[in-house]
Length: 208
Image (cartoon, rainbow, N blue to C red; front, side):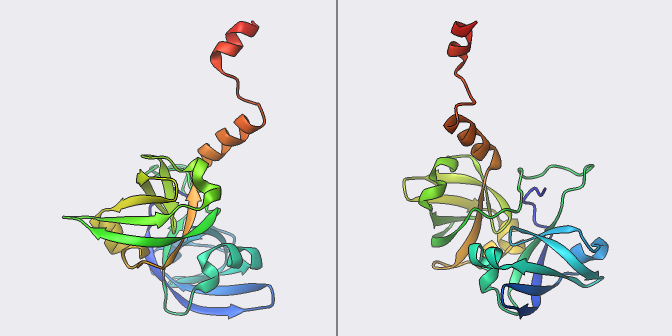
């Protein structure tokens, strides 16, 4: 599990494509210092398993489905990537529950600079509309953010200077794609309601 607090802006050092998968090598001077074979690390919000690690980077396998469903399939050598190691049990919970399971990709539509921040507007994929709410949590390229505005087809987030400087969201421009992971708690609630596993309190009282 992750929290959406990016630890380091790494760089894609190499990529080897196979028939149904790719091997990526990521340069990372901070997160790689204690990574071991089998550890989990989020790369632009995608949970990957470390296959090898040195003090200056790590490698990971990326399956065909992940390449197709996330922006990792379009990464090129030299591209920056957001990195976060899996949360320690004794760590601070700084963001929100992020699984590293990308639900969809979406497109940056506009950026509006503010006095000390930027408002970024993105397209809202139809299949994600039930899970995106004003003031709710969302992860973009693995970054934990709060939805600052929403309508039927778009949503917006406000990026503070630290996010602009230390994550890939600072350089995403209109037309660029980003990975989206909605709040897993919203997905659980929607699933329970759809399958009739949640009952309204008044109904529960009546049935006693």
